[in-house]
Length: 400
Image (cartoon, rainbow, N blue to C red; front, side, top):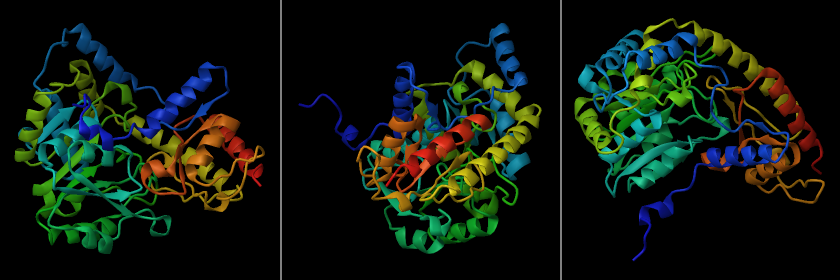
């Protein structure tokens, strides 16, 4: 009898975590490393949010809370959904989890059976397929190449839906590409879903507030209110407020789903950190100046990185609508060799050799389901990004 569960056979360690760990190990060895592999704002959490966390400690708000979050935070979330997305949720239709990933995991664990299918446009966040696999269901990957703007077409969605389809996972702006769907593009997707009432939509809106000029964020249930009754609208404070370590995600959904997710969470982690919850109240209800300030910095960095990478022979880097990633193609470098004779046969080869030769850590496109690309997180200081791009340019120039 095997000790480890069979379900783990289909699950892979997170590539972003693995590459970041490798970069950290090289740095501890004394190497000059620039890690652009993790999706984490480099800014400090805004002062008023940190102060709210400290005040919660001083006030003794350090005990267990309701499994799905304190009432004050759920009320703040309801106000946020109404104010920014035009969505109405009662408190019994909102759940707070230990990060967006737990909220997503709870939703899929609470709903998926062995014969169910989950549609996942690629490139995708690395955890989507593995979470589906861990829940015993089947991820169905829908390739969305660069010539489509890394976006799912209505025709491809229509063709992929079967009687076994239970969820479409939707992410805009996207990790890893930064691609964002306009209202018209999203409406074409929701029109397809209206014809298939058995399919639910899980909308990962984590990068909502990192949206650049020319692109206006919208979420599916906002574009098509008829889908409100079968949509999980997922969000969190990690990216918008530089609160990755605070670990607070949340979602609004029909009560039947929230009840099931609450039961799962009640038998796993129970409540998120009480201190983090009070800090999240301050984030959602307090001054929002930080969002515009950080977005302006990310826009400047985006333009710096896109221009620098597009100036490199062999790379092609589309300009993203949002988030803080670029997803350049290395198609022009496939088949070339490093000075030591190693062939660049894949994006995994490119990323590995780039890290070893230059100390720049990025993530290979295969990890996100679409090659030959790599992901750069430009959540780093301008001078660090300029240095990294110069190193990438030298590496590419040295390939023959």
